[in-house]
Image 1 (cartoon, rainbow over the protein chains, first blue to last red):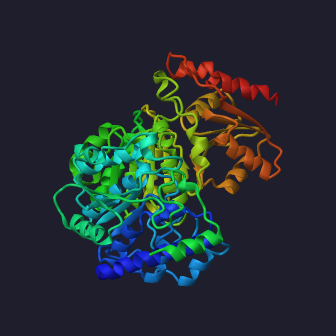
Image 2 (cartoon, rainbow over the protein chains, first blue to last red):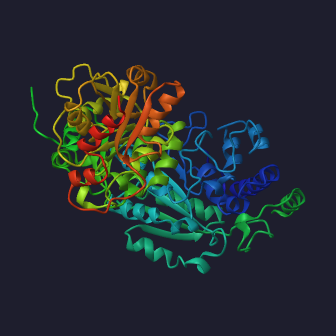
Length: 273
Length: 315
């Protein structure tokens, strides 16, 4: 577990965005925009002292479980895992290339990944099963789940939402990367997901909504939700911007499927701050 | 002890799981709101390790996966077509794909093999499951023909840490394995009758039909195949190779990778001179009412049809 100051967390977030763009340069198949909205969430979890982990023993029994339901949108976790020593940094130079285990969609061959989540809407149910198991073991580990707001269209998510509160899974924290855009359009133009807080409250979850790009706020909220043992599952709705940090992607309804060419990546890195 | 009373596979299996749960605290039983007489005791005595997820088969699989990832042995229980086809993507992503890297001992118990939910109609008939579950890498597929065999599978399900599909008949059936001392689950099949020219190769309920038909057919062999994956193809070929003719019998769609697919592969791979006839349900759902015997008569799966097929070989 690491514990950085708020200022250094911001720097980390900037570094992660640069590294994510560098990965995209060699692997244009990666989902860039989706991997830029959740950077502060990853940074807070891994550098802010929220997640218990052991990079040298990724299946350490006492670790917190982190299930990344929006698998495609976690390319930005690769540099973090490398930085923390889950695998060698040289791996970042061959993402999606022959001999690499870091693909366009992460899987369980990557040290640090609990599950494979190419297909969406599965993570919360799996996490609920693990939360029950951990309770049965009298473990004090927490199960975190990261889901995109577009995943909320999947019916299985709501089966798990009902289940988690019924079973009083206080050791379960769902983080919704609410970047407002699915694949083809803004969610509000597909089927409006709002009001989201009320939906979760109606299902007896504790809900908190924050600015998902203010890393100090993200950190504070995650720590608070992790500690709150009140017989209820928690959801942190992180309002984010899809493609955050890259002007060509931000606020483009189709940014999910956009790739940048090498020149654009270099320009994007240079203007990052 | 001889106990020839008809009994359901699920009760025999769950009673044994109950005994295992007493000595092993790492076993969970999860149902999608489907019951069984034997389940009542289990859910009362193991409140912390029994979960009813409600009528939510996708979450049934996901919750089972999450428990399994934490090292638990999990039994997930629902109606056969609903536990296989409703959550097929959960099965694919989080069991079939995932368990290739992270072993996961989740056992899917599907109740209602073949036409056993006879009068409930085509939504409840399970005719696709053998083919589609045999398709899935890293899965085992178990299709027992009686409760004695189902009960014996509990040890296997604990021993092997991979996902499995267990296809159970919904109806109480008489035992055919009582006293079968030489039954070996890992071998995957059992030779009830050794014949000369024709072998009936069957699975599940159809083995009862095969044994009945064989009474009228001297010299006909009967093999019950219960482990359709991983199949012990070499041993099965050794048992089959002396026959000139074989008939596969299954309560499922034929020509699409079920039991007939397994047997025809074995014949082809060994370049064997065995003429094969496939009996089962051929590319159509059954809407007719009137019970299982009536459906079998309509679909040419009854003893009369089997006898006719054997005689049709003109030996």
